[in-house]
Length: 268
Image: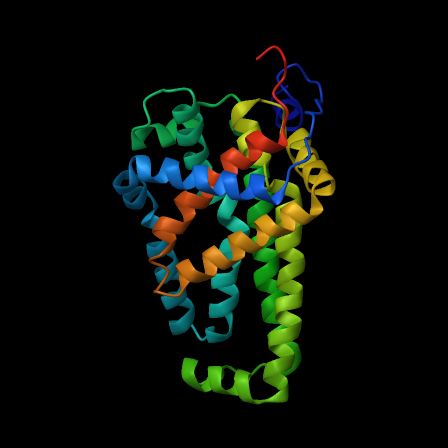
């Protein structure tokens, strides 16, 4: 029965929450509400989310010292694929603030008590698999263009990438492949985690509802994706430190985007 609950809800049924049409103004409003949630107790969230830039710096240092300089950029770009997992505790904080409940940072850990935790872990595992696949794809692309040789230094590699035909091929094709991975994550998880926290619908319904939400609002979801990509880029530039602010703001905003995309049942 535990396995069934991962895919379906607690009753073994597959529900189909009603998706609503939204506008670009709704996307902006969700972002504004995300900022409001962040400013409610910014010091708590920055402290909580400092783990992300710290982990990022550690991983980048590891790749730099492990003859894997060519994977530094894919690693940083891959943070976007794991973003929904990184922000899951923030969805809970926004949910509690919406209900006028205590929003102390420790409540971000309440997600571990959610009846939907098996489904949350399943969707999270899917994102980890996609992240690993992206890293393998990036390495395969590099070897396909440059062969088995390893960059001598980060500066030499950067210069080669920006000034040679091989480098521009790597940039163009690499970003195209990365876009495909990012699109898959956007379509399958844009509201999957908030939905699972709000309603224990199961992993299948969460993913399927996210896909329907994107299909019903393609322009608005692309707009949201661009906002996320630009924000993560800006947050990553100063040694990833900006992610301590960007991730909580985007996390809170995602909760409000979910509220706009999914119709609340009349029973609620």
